[in-house]
Image 1 (spheres, helix red, strand yellow):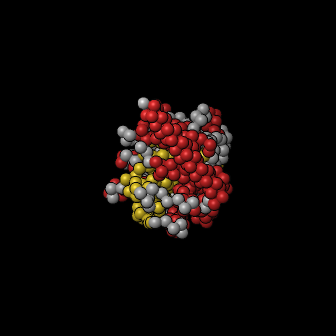
Image 2: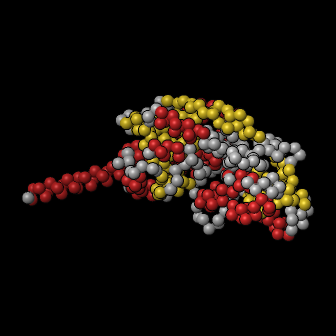
Length: 462
């Protein structure tokens, strides 16, 4: 009996030391990942070229085509096992050169407002449209006005972000419906056009574009966003009396165009058929340089593979970088990728997307359909002690738009989560430039994503 107890004690101590030894090995390697990312990352220079040399990359544009070729060439220099392009037909909307919103008649007199057309909007034609403005905060107020209060007028949706939301993405979610669906909702009652308060968390003079969704059974009417400062000004003008506004936009929708998802991978040495995907979306809006949204996510995904090669790390599972095309106004790249993955019978264990900007890393949010979701989330959270020194959490939440079509195939979706407080100062604006991204924060993001990839690759999700 004593011998048996001694054997169990020795075995227990041995197992404990073995686990501690493995944890120390993992901690050492994660530290090495961060050290290497902060000294040998390629992400910042890649981002410089993507933004300064190419610029805004709206799907179907020459800039989007240039971005496809640049990132393919960069992945091709890393010595990966495979690099390829996945064809996808994408929408081709062009902004045109005329965007005017002017208060033409009010107690304030004539005032030019800072404005941009919403992505996918129809143009006004020449010489533009004029109309009396009616202000609403939500669709219920619009319905109360009805056709009698809306017909022939310009509807002004003026619902601000909820400032009490600490997560600004939640505030965005509470306001963005007026941009996405407002034009069609207003068209139901005969509106001539729509103005939308920009999707911004603060007051500034920068208008934010973004996509809308027209209903096929309703007229398509022009829709433009105005800056939050100008939204405040217009609202005050309406309090003083009737206001008429002139709108002009020369945007138009062209036929769909051929583009590509850009893909590169390192094959796994033990379980090559299990895929860990890291990605971002290569397209961006045309008003800025698409640095935070989502140049940062793309170069971080590329950097994961670059750092793995630099560290001489040969993964057990296949690590695949996917740069998706057309997240901003169609999600065609994400849908096409999921269709192809399903057609080929590919097994995506995990998909990680970086599409919340290049700010300071805070952690990861996790989503999934599988009945194994709770067990998988628990498996991820067992590594919290290894990630806490880098201020990283793992919690339930959203994954990412481009990877969302993989959810129905039981892929675990993970969203990389940087600090969100400043994101909507830049989102979909001319201010989203290379200079707005901090080099160290960007590199720390690459390290955070690779650290999680390393742990999943080593241990799976059992």
